[in-house]
Image (cartoon, rainbow, N blue to C red):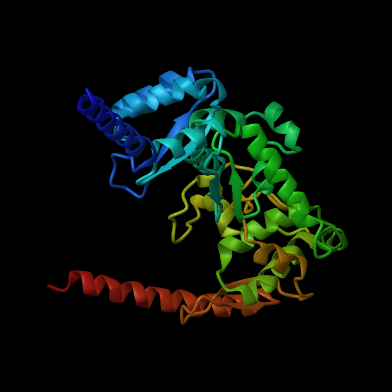
Length: 347
């Protein structure tokens, strides 16, 4: 009898050890560094977890996870969001993470965007809201009122940076967060005062900076390019900015513009309409915005790329001088294109 009891105790101890190993030991079934579990609003949380666990290799011993989840009230406490399950994570740690709603944040890295569709795609890729729903929101002036913008100026909310959000943050709250960060940006370094001294609103400065951003990658000449456009505006001239035509055409791959391109009917076509366009044509960097705010006072009216293709420009105060520089660049460009054609034709 004692032997039987001893054997039963040994078996119980072994079962307890096995249970403990299954519960506290590595339980994941995937080889990747981690996988994400997504819980959406307005859907049964238990069903969502089961569907993802059954369709993908998340964990071994699913029966034990479900048993523990029931006993520890996971389904009542689990909230919508994105949860990261790391390789070799235990069932115990997964249960604790879900019960305590420890979500995995979204690091939204925004660099240059051009159009609302770009922002909608980024939202759809990183959040629970799909891109079509995000686009519908970004196309609605009524919806955008909450952030003090419209369909033309909504992109002025975006200061390129890295932002941290929860995965299930709705579009409205994403924009309100961007609005807060935008306000913080403009309230620093006397930016509001500098914009006012130029006679521009922050949105107008942002719009001008977006054009400068598309014109050059050289930070040390962005101020001069901004001065050219500000001089044209102050003299009542057409802005005549090539990047605005590309934006109007929604063709950002264009290398050269022809007269037919300049005839496109759009308020963004600065070859047809005076003043700044109604909104930005991309999301400029903080460096470019500051270059506009701190642009030097010049008499420059024209600029054209230098013929050595070094990325810099020649600036002019008269059309005659500009024409000379433009011919030099055009000749160099024609010669370069001829050489490229010869290389392609060579056997």
